[in-house]
Length: 163
Image (tube, rainbow, N blue to C red; front, top):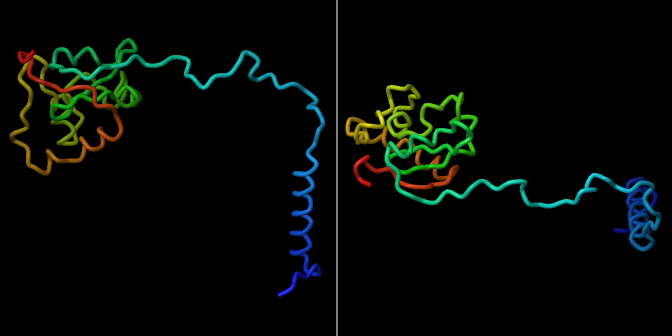
């Protein structure tokens, strides 16, 4: 099988290869006509501000309640005793979000029942909901895996009098 310059594809390919070799061997040495100014004040890969670090700690329903996203605070919620920092999802869990009622609260029952109503939340001055009336299928609904893969685990939730 010989290389035939009579076919247009082979001729175009040979011209492209020769042009590419010429650009590599003899690069353009002309100066740019204008100086780029988009990075005039410097450039850095560092973000403008880093979110404050949140250490793993033990929360009670009362100490978890302030983390509801009001006034730009972090947004935390708990599912089956595990506290997640869901600040990255503030459009969902922050003020005026569709799941804002879960912010700063134990969302175990609401997630298990897949209901986002206020009556799914246990009052913060009451004992934690043990979910004893739920079926095993409702309790293992995949929400913990979803939250663990998407958000930071930042603590555990215990009874109000446990700390």
